[in-house]
Image (cartoon, one colour):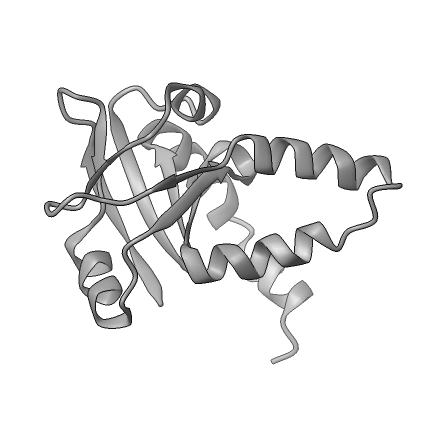
Amino acid sequence: MFYGEFRHSLDRKGRIILPAKFRDVCKEAGVDKFFITRGLDKCIFMFAEEEWRTQEQKFKNMPFTKQEARNFNRLFFSGAVDVIPDRQGRFIVPPYLKTYANIKRDTIILGVANRIEIWDQDLWKSYFDQSSESFERIAENILNI
């Protein structure tokens, strides 16, 4: 559903804009509400509402008797907030999520199939530089092609 890499900056009011390509996909699919929360690797995860409900169900089914499951659910769900982008595709990211992801101004917005990731531009560059070197090795390890 979501694919590509886009550069955007926070505006004067601290809003981020959803890339036009993503807005077009959402319009076709009838998506207008999203959930954003703490992601992995210091980014922000953004899910369309239907996908959020799917992920929510998976995480709710994790056994609360397991410490790691409790810890993950606390951090994941306590950071969550619903957002509805305005007509220009802008939405506000709460300060605590911007702090978590170290976002000050310049961002990279990624389409990662069923979710969107919002990264601080410098953190994304660092992550990409480190990870791209091992891309082929990772593919060999996880793909059965």
